[in-house]
Length: 332
Image (tube, rainbow, N blue to C red):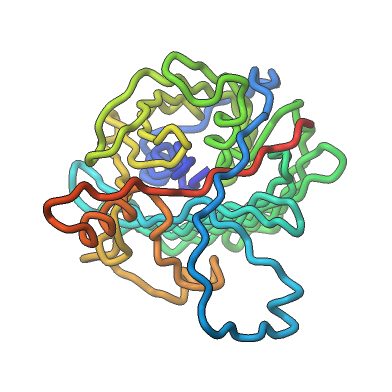
């Protein structure tokens, strides 16, 4: 989940609970459900990208490039974190599919200022082509206190090593109820349901909260459609870890914004990194340590719409955005 207790969830759809926990406004529930989710993965194959004109001269790939096919980036975006309407932090997130390993990879980096708890948080998570958890690494720094979780999933179980400050490492072992997934992949699980993402659809599920290695029940309902920054959006009501919030996503599952009225927290996808980090403390090395590079955040509807508007002549309609769709998850 986008972790500190706000999971954009897709930003991924679960980010608001994370910051709420970081601010100490809510506590985790005492009980956990073991009911499996009601939906079964079956996602549409990704739309092919239009072919670019062949260049006159093509550089010969080196051995390293030829041996490693590039991952398909499904989504990459920068977002602002807002508290009471005030810009207090940023998030950068990327989802990929590794065609060689046939794995989904989700990563994010979150940072907020003092008004939102002085949080730095990151996650790198992997799931197989059927969205079954494979492993994740989570890091958190809140007001100078560090915490890390390294999790693996041997033989249908969760094994997580937690290092919290100066305390001795603690190993968490739990059995996974059938269908349990990493919360950061919530939207892909919704997309893989029989009817996909549509108005009126309801998704009951069990998901792993990456920031505490706990397994919690959740429920998401697509309540209707709204216009968000000139884009058609699905309004999703979600409850996870006893926190209720609203997410706005496209029909392809691409997040646009999240809202938690009770905590006065919100996130908004913005066209560029500059929009997200403006006025915030920003260290590029912290981001590249998570992603391996500095994400440009252009593979999302908000950035594509902004680019199309700038490129289009004033008397014409901007072209329709084209984004990648997740490959079809395999049934477990």
